[in-house]
Image 1 (cartoon, rainbow, N blue to C red):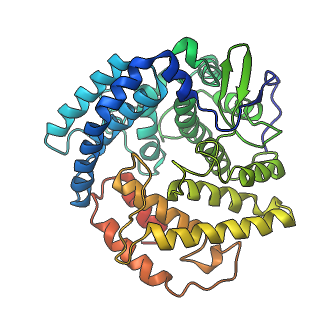
Image 2: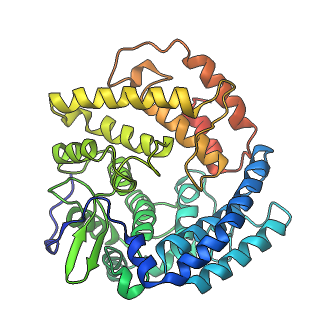
Length: 396
């Protein structure tokens, strides 16, 4: 379990249900709203072109990274000028022959983005791999946080957003940076990179102070006027629980919170624009699986109903008869859509009876669906990390 931290968290109250920091950014920085409204049709058209390239097996990693940064700028910042420059870079990348360079001069895999935490996120899976080879490009982009004081200052600086005053919602960076750094530092990866020996205590103390004992969740805090509001974030909680192997505290409260937020909007609920997604369902399923040994009888009964409901939705809506994934979250690359759909099915034991922690049902159609999904994933660009991870989830 997490160690008790030395400093208590400042007093905060739960954010009002349905509240969104984007509304505050929009009210105080109307230029980003106007720019986004004008640019969104072009962005969607670019994403549709990328879908076609990905379905044909082409490498789109760099431009997908640039588009991910673009969505962050339009949804989490108030800087319309920077967003417009970002869109110009996306247009340029769309014209470049592929594939381009895999890594940049600082050794990151985030060749399509200019933002440090996106470079970190794009690099994490590759740096964690047993066979990672720096190939003369050491990951120097990690150096700025390879110091206990600098790491602590960086992590602490992500916890609270002041969107009205600063034009920035730090939630995305908090989520992506912590999910990468927890894995890299605690697992001492990449091989050959010398992490400072005092970073692990910094990470563990930070996590212990960050988890909210009232909800069991991890989330972002916001200063709104003279108040501090705390959110319960599905994605952040999934990442911390999964990457720590379930060794976090407050599981009964966490499961109560998870079940109570079923019909709320992501990231403080399960739904994206009012509908299910395989990505969010996967997060929920993992939390239920990790929490199952610690859950009360009433929580397990509710959990079974919800897992059955999510599985039915997946088979009826997310996966077509020919194995095509047809229900996708906004902004997902094609390989990501396949990965999250397959990861959900794998987590609930659809393919493997030994993983059916919640049911004794038999899924006679599982092998046929596995084969059709595998065929579709093999048509994707095989250097995309999510394609390889999807095949691994299929046992292929």
